[in-house]
Length: 72
Image (cartoon, rainbow, N blue to C red; front, side, top):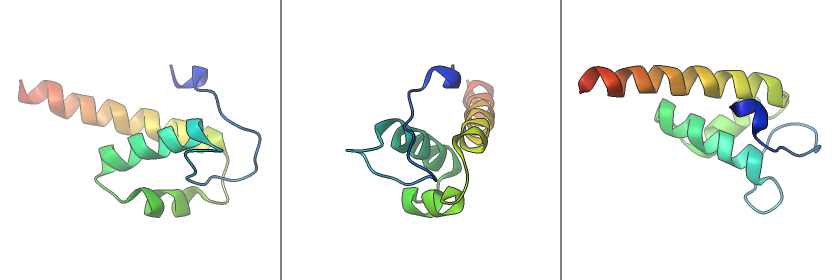
């Protein structure tokens, strides 16, 4: 599903809702799952590419969903 996320061609990773809505969405999801600050997460991925970010978001969502399902 994350492969369908529309991203931009700007190098690196940064949080910018106006110019990078897809990237910002992924950073928000990862920050919520990790209970971290969005800007801290963005700094972690600043020099990386979208591939690693997408993989980490998928892993975080999977882990988070296992916790939620396990609680019910």
